[in-house]
Image 1: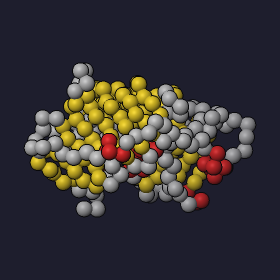
Image 2: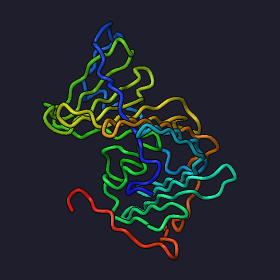
Image 3: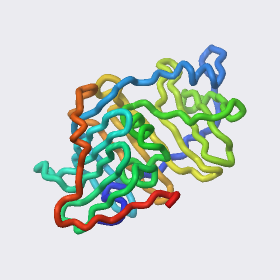
Image 4: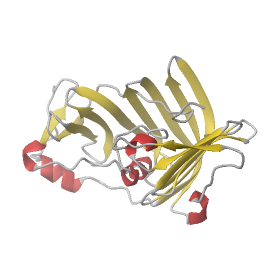
Length: 257
């Protein structure tokens, strides 16, 4: 397995779009929209999903078992059609671990964004990544001078622009009637980093489909939830994963290291 987990993927579509048309008949500020955003309260997710990923000129697909529990626990198991384990990535809130069955190495590091990107490559800390998976898209905290609101008539969505244009900033797209965030794009300066798009409802407030894209490397991943349950208790020992016997342990550094 390459250092990064076999399903690492994702590319991010440009969502800026021209500002055309007219917003719904209401006067609204960025702060008012942020305050009125619907924040799904789902605490846990357990079940199977279908993963489709395209990266490095190759397309891969697999059934995955997903377990997520707020604030910061997450596990993905890639399975064969007969439900045998192919690969596992696990985060217990502090430590990240990933390995591929039959490989000789087990990769272990801190639960930092660089390592978590091997599961979902979004510029988020672990609690934000878990929230995003549960349909609760994290909104970048930004000072008042870096919070603006526009209406995207082409998409019929509100667009929040959050953060300084010369640093990490985010565009969040909000459905006007439901006040739910349906997608976001992250940039650093002029460089697009990643995007996340939600589609449909599966269980409670969980989105049926999550699509993540990245530009470097150019990749595209779709995670479609299939048979899942929400808000059922998750035994914390599920996330107490150790490297399999016989595998050598390889350290995964974070950016600061």
